[in-house]
Length: 158
Image (cartoon, rainbow, N blue to C red; front, side, top):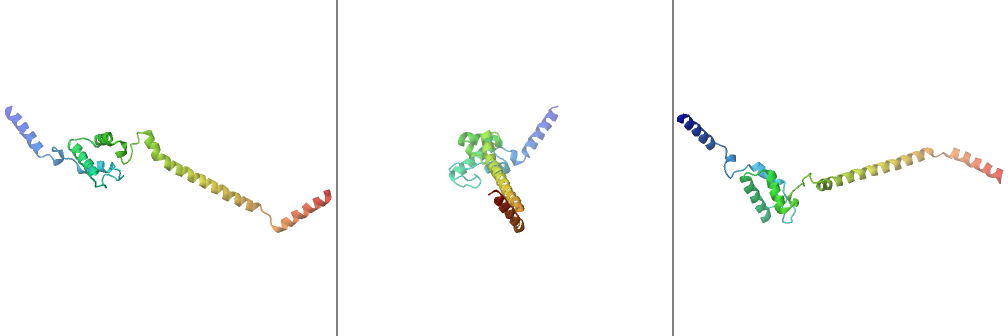
């Protein structure tokens, strides 16, 4: 029985020693780091994405991300941490769960779409009106006939 337990313990120890470095203490996935870094904006006033900025504030933010990932935190937890420190302005794209943020992102596109539709309908009506008025115009022979009829009417009643 003890030999069986010793074999299991040895197997567990060996399997833990051969784990990939991503599961070791203090290590993290570089792709996850890049994803989190790309989703944040530097907060020193430059307005650049964190991955493109190289000032002291950006370096400190990157170090905070690395530390949090090494502690085993998820990207959502890191976003929450960054928002708690810097506010929602730190996010490159605001979360759609907040109605105001969703409205602020969608409204300009809707205004452009509605404006384009109004311009299209206005031009269509204007061009259509000009086309129908051109079709209703009379030629010179018809005009002479109408003028003669008007002259006869004027003579008859005056």
